[in-house]
Each structure stands twice: as structure tokens, then as C-alpha cells.
Length: 425
Image (cartoon, rainbow, N blue to C red):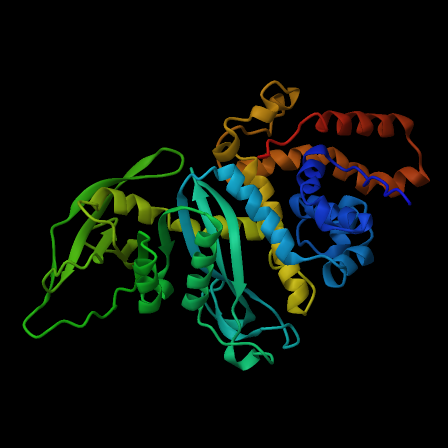
């Protein structure tokens, strides 16, 4: 029986993270391509096309395309393993669950499920592909959970069933609950907040939520009842970095209270002028006196727009160059896997830099030990730099061998390999 060779090594923390998925790939070359894509997506390369990723990770672009489009591996198994790692890292800790859709412009009509539809990134209608996404926030760190592609009625394939975005969101929440995730609260924007099916499902699932509604949202009242505004309350909006700023909140009461837990609030930065860009309306269901807590909770909704967008832009969510959804789904799951790698190495999961507490790397002028997903990403990219530089210089070093440069790069890469990830076991 032929012994399977070991995979080619890259950078220790990438190799050790990817090693947890090794059993999903029967072919060692497919596992190497899986690792190379993680390294390339994580690196500072802009516009993550496969040729650029191949240069960054010293891989073959055609092999990477084959891995993405045709290689025998299961995206469902990959997702299940990633979820298993997250569950182990969370250790039953509850977190904020965010629901949002994300859209990216795509030209032409050949890409599966592309249509002229609302694209959140540009705030208007355009040709593109849209997905509904679920991700968590733990101590200010966002981490990816799951996604569903939105299939417009005009682009359904045989066997497809049309589902609205709120319906897809409910499916995601039910799936995550069944897997064992625990939510402290669910946050979503007005598309979901104004969907009765969505909020009713959250009630049925006994989940707390804070969701947006538009200022012109209509609530039908029985004859003789009317809408009234309670007085403004001031609260300190506390941000992820610990800073605080004054905000104002008041409850909007529709008719007589009848024991129904759903309540409406208005938040603003200026209760006199109520500027549209900093005035929000929300509907929520936590009981009791919640003016302070609900204001802070809703403040986290900025992560719906910012947290996942940050990961998308940095890791190449929209940079796929394939048209079949089978391959697009694989690309998105790979991006989520890389985002998970970053999240699991953040202080929210590991504590204050245990992997590098005594390392000389801490004196690098660009090393940042503070909290936050982006800081962790930047630190991990510093660890990749020597290897990526070696890969980019490799063609020149074959033409013009420079022993001192080669030895120096090898020493730098060896130093980076002394840093090991802190992943749950």
C-alpha cells in the first residue's frame, strides 16, 4: 500500500488551522490547495483573483481553479467542521446574533442567481448576487456562522423554491439553534424588522431581539386608540473600545398595552432636531425597564453593516471569478473559514495574546495587541509577510541566486513558525 506523503508546509498557524480539516480531503493535493487558498485569502493581496493568490502562496492557478470548481470535496462537511470549531471555542457562551443580507455587483447574466435587484453595498438597484448571512459578535469580535443565497424568482432553476430573505433568515436561525448555538439577542435591519413572519418566528423560538423599522412604519390601531410618545431618556452609548457618548431614547406606545411583549422605541443623537441620519426606530421584546440596555444593544447593529463588510472586503468575498453556484458556495465557505481563523485568534476567544506573550514579534512597530477583529487580522498578516515575500521572490532567486537573501528569508520564516495558534481541541 502506497503511503500518502505529507502536505507541503507553509506557515505554522495556517497549517495547524487547516490540519483540522485534513480528513475532509482524500487527495493530498486538494488539501494543499485548500491550505494555499487560506493563506492567499488571509494575505494582504488586493482583489483576490486565483492567479494573484497562486503567486502569493506559490501555487498553480489552474490547480486552484480545479479545486474550487471540480475537485471532490464537500462544502457541507467543511461547514460542519468549522461550526464544530466555533462551538468548542464558544463553550456554550451566548453571543449577539446578527442577520443581514449582502449583495455584490456582477456583470452579465451567466452567473447563477444574478439579477437586477437591491444591492446593499451601493444602496440601490443593480445587477448582482445577494445572500442572507448570519454571524455572531462576542466581546466586540464578529465571527461568521452561515449563509443562504437569495434566489430571485426570475432566476430559479428546476427544483428551486422561491424564499424571501426573511424566510431564509428564519431558516438560518433555526439551523443554528439546532446545532447548539446560544443567542443573547438577535439584531437585524428594517427588512426583517418589518416582516411579521420573521418577528413571529423569533417569538415562537423564544428569542430576544432588537430589530429596526422605518420611520413610516404603520401599526393599525382599534378605533379610539392612538399613538403616543413617552418622555426622552438619556443614556451613555458605550462603544467597543470602552468610550461613551450621550444618546437619547423614548418609547413609542401604540394604543393600550395588552400584555404583548413587543415594544417600539425611537433613538437619536439630538431629540430636538432628530436628524434623519442619526435617528432610528426599533422594535424589541425584552421585558422591564430597558431604555439603557436596548440603546446599547441596538448600537451593536452597526456591526451588521460594518463587521461583516470588513471581513468581506479584506478576505475577498466578492472576488470569485466563477459562474456556477456550486463553486460560488465553495468560495464563500472558504472565505468564512478564513474569517473564522482570524476570529478564533482574537482576544475574545484566546485572551490577551497567549500565543505571542513572550515572543520577540511583539516589538514589531506594526504589532497591535489590542482587541478587535481587524487588529488580529493585521497581526496574522505580519506573520505571513516573510513567507509571502519568499514566494514572490522565488522566480528571481531561481534566476539570480542570492544565498544571503535566501538564508535571511529562511530564518524569518522559521521565526514565524514558532507562533502556534490557540484553537479549541
